[in-house]
Image (cartoon, rainbow, N blue to C red; front, side, top):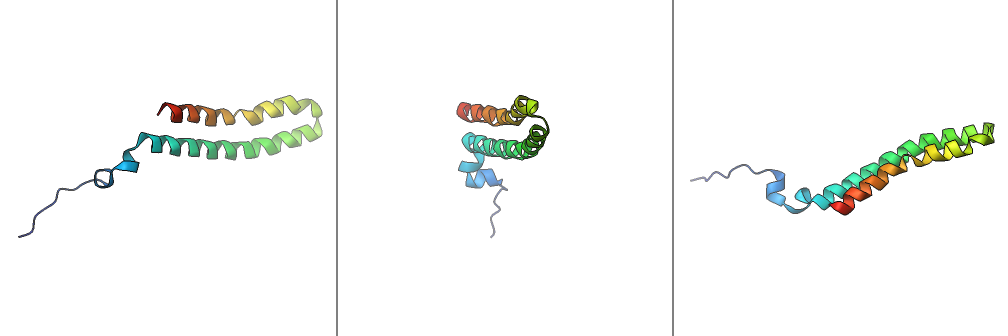
Length: 82
């Protein structure tokens, strides 16, 4: 006769990568870096346009361009702690 097998989730059948905290942290760092790059794309182009109009806006444009990069730094801290 046929035996029934209890349903298992993917994590229970494969194990390893799906349950590894380091893999989850690596995905978090990658997504944070992607998001920061996407944000810097718009900020950088706007900052360069503003600097072309008025050179006194250089420091403000530089600071606003660097702010999204702090997200990646915080994500790396999480990765190191995981």
